[in-house]
Image (cartoon, rainbow, N blue to C red):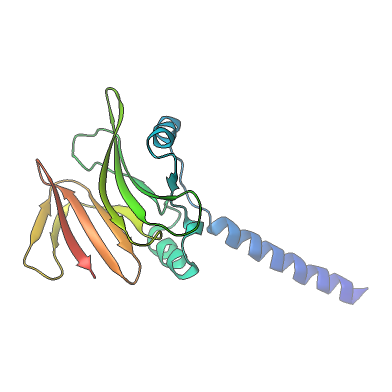
Amino acid sequence: MRLSVIALGAVAICLSTFSNSRIAAQESCDIPKVLSDALRGKYPELTVLRINDLPQSDRELFQKEHGQDCAGMTKVDFYGDGAPTWALVLVPSEKNGGSAKLILARKGSRGFEFSALDSANQPTAVVWQAPSGTYSDLESDKTIRAKHQVLVFASYESWAIVYAWMDNHIGKVWLAD
């Protein structure tokens, strides 16, 4: 009887640990309904990248650096005008490879306007926003001085690119390759 109680206690601890790790693996990808509807209309074959779409090592790195943020979406004041803008990593709905697409979705007076910024050869690139500042290219003397928040599009242990609004165009520098 005493052994059964100890065994049950061990099972409860294991289940609790497993449950907590499952909760930790979840992320905050609360896409506003109007944006979700617009995405389905514009990109019906694509979906927003989720943390569970990433390989385990990438998942752990993203969560270590960004907590429960969404790996495939970030709200950003990219243009510096306060207009609702989201950067999205869209991947094929069917999990059979394909490329990740970096899309900007900006709410305008007639709904959302979408701009394709880039694509990756693999479906596991992530996005996050970073503060304004100076960013220098890894391999050239190119530098951008961002007045507003920037976007970082990255594939862990591979490459990272910063995108910034430069008054009338989008600037881009490689941080890692």
